[in-house]
Image (cartoon, rainbow, N blue to C red; front, side, top):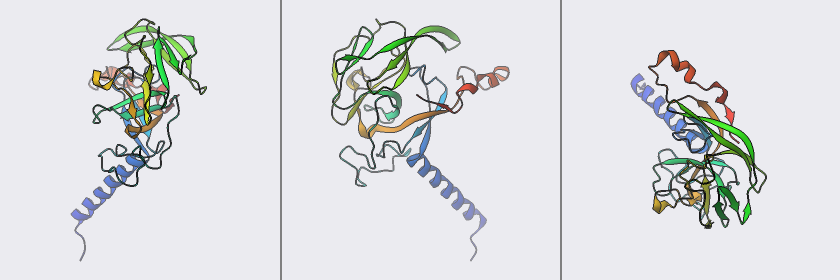
Length: 251
């Protein structure tokens, strides 16, 4: 008995959806950047690719949460796991609300002591070197402003850009944080406009991020467009695409 065309089509759709789900679970998944907390590394309107395989897999690896806690996962809730390196840019599930994805940079590893004093980052009691690198022009809702840009060098030698309006903003002087075992300390590269691990989860911030909450490592921006320009603004729409950011590597 021949299968009716309708059911063949349904079967093809199911197979295609299942394949897409597997790819987004074990290989890579796109995410949009909604805030300026990672400027100048990531811009509002960037669509980035998170490599799911980079740190192994947890129950948060699947876009539809079909991976259970079991499956022989380690005590940290991951299988085939490889811990992140300091300086990695990571998509993770917000600890206080795992329905929300955040993207930040790993600054503190388990056991590290982290502190910010007068705007300068200290890791295990040692100041993190930074050097001036001009200014970054940040545009939001049609308004532009110049913010001081620096190149920061982490203890493992990795460098990345940060921006600082000044060294006297809200989170430029903190207590000392001791990162618990199995957790990570995340910060945004836009140091004065980032809700990150400097604010505890109980206070509405990020707090320490459990290892199992890591979703994937950000290696590349897929494409980017200015979200302040709507699709119906026909004369400006094509100009809203930031061609220089297409397929650009994330440091």
